[in-house]
Image (cartoon, rainbow, N blue to C red; front, side):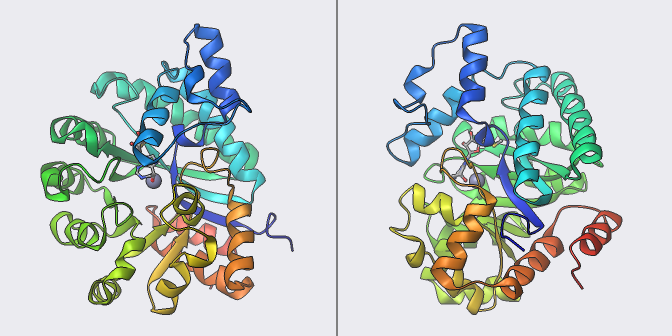
Length: 328
Ligand code: MCF
Ligand code: ZN
């Protein structure tokens, strides 16, 4: 079986970050919005470093202005994921971008997303869930508004709450109210940490916010006591190696710590993060892991088991995906 055909689970995918550049350019043209500076001469997203990446991401997002725009985007994203064998995916969605964190507006965006996801499930065989995500550099007040949107709409589709954005700003504990609010609404919790923030940011996210998954988390490798703590707490890492290499966190795939983290017993999973920004796909991630570390079918099965165990879905969905993937 080719790596492309192999059935996969993705736990870490930002909805706007998965938008093909041509899709964003098309909407910009329709709406007469000038965002040409977000692209290079070949039409790819163009950014210099992490902080500039965040700015380009937000510029691209500025053309997505209605629930219909988001429905079209989600359709395109799920189609692309399904082509790479993904049968279960979790998407980061942000009420900041979808209606300015107004609960009534957010419900409209969510209805469009949910019906698109249901259609894709029927037509393409891919199951999707949404993780409401607050954006760290927008600050704790905006995060509270996002958490309230999340709490109001927690259910079959919105199953998680998280935080992404610039780890250089503030501390995980500044967002405690939002995470408590989401937890009380029954949402599962994840936080981006240990990417640009170093090992202490992972420790803070786990201890202060009580998350069960960490987005990235790879810098934990710089502190082996922390690696042990993550193992004891059974924290799952949503690792996005292609993203880390593209953003310059590691100079090459072989230098990426995913294999060392796995060998030390941590539950690692594999995702693309923002695939067109990083010129990646789930197939490319798997091919590079095979090339860099000799990963074979048995190791990919272990990764799938980790992902399914940590998925923010109900037991019936988990059992169905396990059966489909022949995971015991
Ligand atoms: O994981 C990558 C890099 N690290 C941190 N944050 C993000 C990544 N991709 C997108 N983000 C953030 C960004 O601030 O998530 C937000 C973006 O605005 C969208 S969440 C639907
Ligand atoms: Zn991310």
